[in-house]
Length: 155
Length: 130
Image 1 (cartoon, each protein chain N blue to C red):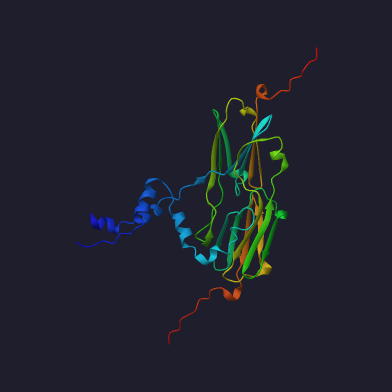
Image 2: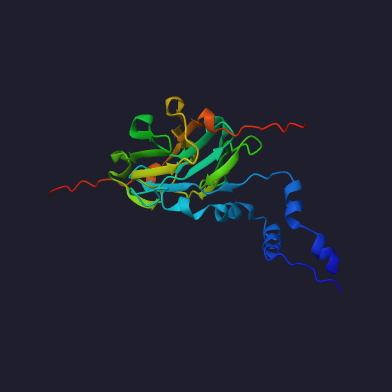
């Protein structure tokens, strides 16, 4: 009788199908190299806005959830290898004056995120725009460091 | 039977299905004032066109959809955000007036103002001196 290899995560996949739950998302967190965690600014400032970073061959793309903020309240700094985003989200006084609070889950206060950039970026052409409370930052990678296809010559 | 278990890969089956829409409950604040109740919901990335607010028989439902990352064009480096939409329901009791609900969307924050019915607003009572 052949011994079949059992994938320990198989059972979790089956459970996630049963309950209509997307286990795939959790997978991504475990892929994250440890060395990134300490420098991502998760513990600086009073709160930490959620941040995503994606990339293609030409650039890095960053999205940060910053609801209720205006561009003037956000400070973005970039060097070749670090992106820093900081600011403060203030709660308008009108909201809390003469109010009885039933529920308050939203975060306020200062935040300070630092994002390490593995591939140096062209700081002159970094683009940042804000729409509906999300800050979109595009960081073009420096041309010299983009992967180059190497042709194999056949003699 | 053993062979079936070894060769079948559940993750492959899941991926061939249509990517279904996912929603999470947004971070919410509820404040009660003398004349109304205000609900604030953080729904960054949702624009007016992708927002639905419905009231039906005492239940107020909010559904907001937003663009997610295009994984065919780029790959993830680091992911913290939930990439789906937002959904939340509230049950309004009889002291609130659903006819006059107002909603505002600014910079990804949805503000819903529900006035209280006249009868329930606190009224100051004058003390007459004899």
